[in-house]
Image (tube, rainbow, N blue to C red; front, side, top):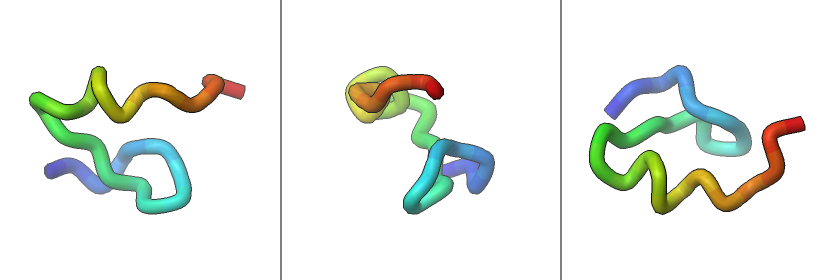
Length: 26
């Protein structure tokens, strides 16, 4: 788990990163 992901949790997962990338990248 990396704490450089998008808000609100700022958590990025190696495997679930793509699945959690449903929000607009604005």
